[in-house]
Image (tube, rainbow, N blue to C red; front, top):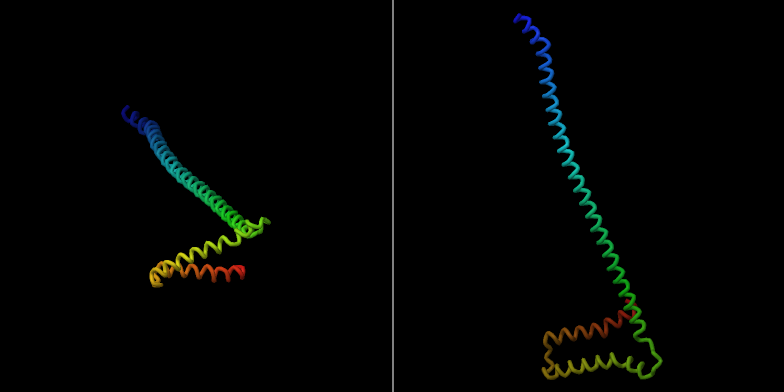
Length: 155
């Protein structure tokens, strides 16, 4: 009877138990594998999301910088156009004699007064030029001679 019981348990029950145990171990391994795959997929999705967010942020910054550069270029262009127009209109006669005469003499008169004061200062110093006086001389000569000759050539 024991041999029959051992045969019964050794054959079908042992196979059934081994089948259940191996199925349990396989399912546990599959479950562990699936959890690890989901964790890795989540990490990959997070990294992809971060790269996408960084690309969107970079594109937005570049778009803003492009807009800022265009706006600055437009402002500079408008300022240059306004300055050019003001320079064209500055010496245009108004038709009123005393206004046109004033506009014609105000710059030369102001320059003459400034030069006169500077020469008086030099005379008081005994015409010994200091560093400041040398800088003023360079500016005056550059303005009156170089600026005018370049202006006549259209530069």
